[in-house]
Length: 298
Picture (cartoon, rainbow, N blue to C red):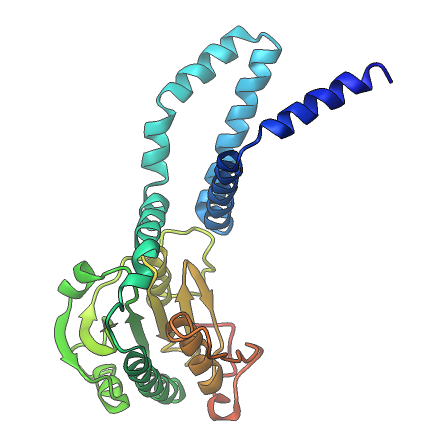
């Protein structure tokens, strides 16, 4: 008991010395660590981070065991480690900084604007887009459509042709008609307008992508890794409808599931009082049943 009391007294003094600033400090650090973990969890950066942790453990072990040669080597490695991390993690760091820079101003974008009018325009765009995509899915017409959000895609738009028209289903289908001059590139939708077509997207360099995915899907994943855009893909080989978001690819959408997903991504974040029910992505409806081969894509 005589040993426990001093320990309890010491702990109580530490607790008493904690201020509200300390609590805020701990909460911010915890949030940063959580955000970093969430960001790298399903990206290539996860494997790279694991490699760095192993090197740190080797450095600590060499210090504890007095392995002077190994300790000298590890210390020199970590002296240039910051530069090496910046070079190795360059794509992930760029994506993270773009999203961090966009989030604080996300709620300020529409100050003074009509929420109802903006939401109705977005829903009209989603309806036209969904109709066109499902029609192209039935016809197995390949398509790649990028919906810009907070990250501006001016460099991508410059690589294509400016159109700046209302995104009607008829116009979208005509642009991706396989004889049309702009059908090979990506379409960019900005501010609910069909802004550009024939654009070139960066291909993903993620080595974990399944080999069955073709250039169109790799471009969609690559674009989603470098921005917060929502990318809709239609496979030219199978007609499968997919959505790429934050480096991940969701597949096998039907009319109902695609529209619900787009509404939840593009409208619900600005309209929290409206609840959108997501349908499970377990298959496709009868209006898309001709696309049963979901193990292949363009």
